[in-house]
Image (tube, rainbow over all chains, first blue to last red; front, top):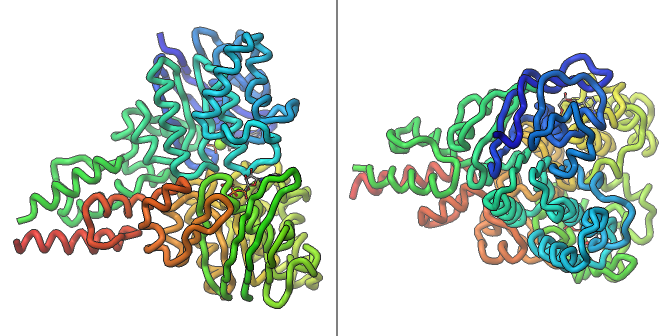
Length: 286
Length: 273
Ligand SMILES: Nc1ncnc2c1ncn2[C@@H]1O[C@H](COP(=O)(O)OP(=O)(O)OP(=O)(O)O)[C@@H](O)[C@H]1O
Ligand SMILES: Nc1ncnc2c1ncn2[C@@H]1O[C@H](COP(=O)(O)OP(=O)(O)O)[C@@H](O)[C@H]1O
Ligand SMILES: [Mg+2]
Ligand SMILES: [Mg+2]
């Protein structure tokens, strides 16, 4: 049974005319790490909200079709039931911070406290997550007196610490430094390897290619493509729909036009694939 | 208009020392990108340029003005700062009001205000959204409104704090175009970004910050090739620079043209061999 099963979903926000999501169908298996890509306004956040149950429980509007998450049909359940299974990291980290706590440490422990997790386990989990997200040094700081990227790390940590069965992340690395971005992808990949189901809206194609199992491309609220990263991310459809591609893919495409890229090889999405292809191109020179 | 920063130190109330001695000159018309790890002090540094923050120690000069002698309202005529988080900046009820606010405040006559607003909205592709409430726009468009409201002030120095955050390919191109236009107008443009590919493709000079200090400052191609120093502040070289390094290119490349030129050259050498 799929962990996330969306069938023919159409959703329209209140007081708007056209649907933000149109006839969307997708399945995510347990332990899969899936990326959602798309231009601004394509519906990435809306899909994240829907999978996390914020639509329809928090935003009104009209929802048609089926959204089943961890076996619970979201229209026929409460947000509380869903929250036990799904954690959502918001696009804007400011929306995540509870406002109830004075230090970063307390902020991250907040959710566990509410669940009544024993103190020892709580400390262990909070310390571990803070190390994974690179914020150990910020433990005693106010969650508001931080740089943008530090705040985003805190927002991410406050959800990771809950160890939800299903993790939904809306552009969680938008303000992170480059190596921090890669580390976050790595951490999330490891969690998915241990069974967590992950859906992540992202623009950073290089890391999507390197770490995810499947990519869903949205355009104007509809599913444009879904499939293995190497396939979706090299599709010539992406640029036509305002979706960025990796520099490796772009440069290899130009090289291929000049017969400098091995004819038998698909276009690369990762650095390793690009290296292999361009080394091959030189070896074939004669 | 020249920017001159001397031995700048800054501590936030509560004691975090965010800048630990930064000295920097940016000349009129330069196009500069600032990169560096989260918490490096990038935002703190640029907030000193229009007087939002004042040095704990050291001086910041904008042209002949020492920022400690001028209020933010005056400094705003020289330095336009687009906040990292647009929600800290926007407060008007319509996009038009928001974009017109700055030039009105600077005392421009109504006709000039209308012209400045029109140009800024065209450049950011906001034309047609004049009557929309900024809060009804998606976050990525709010950032464009924040940019337009600064561009409309027509300041000689423009500072963009992470304009590319969360933006799609088309918006990044639009932002690169804005930077180019400002540069052609002779303005000084300073941009903070984590997008090193964007940096390599659009900026000549790059400043790398880490731990409240400047670690590197120089031509993009030299700076972005210093893989080891960059890594100390959590920055990686751009994709094509990394690819070139892996292919043992004799010198670093930073965009498609440079990459392909070098690769064609290697290819010809192999052909002959
Ligand atoms: N309002 C504040 N009060 C106290 N400390 C702050 C405040 N804002 C930032 N800091 C601290 O100052 C240091 C520099 O922060 P700054 O915002 O300048 O970083 P940055 O380089 O812009 O980072 P980012 O890439 O995450 O935006 C960090 O240690 C940060 O936690
Ligand atoms: N709260 C809202 N009310 C009305 N329309 C919205 C709301 N949030 C998003 N939309 C609209 O839904 C569409 C999809 O937006 P969104 O899911 O935020 O896209 P993305 O995350 O891919 O940038 C856009 O047309 C946007 O304007
Ligand atoms: Mg979004
Ligand atoms: Mg910043």
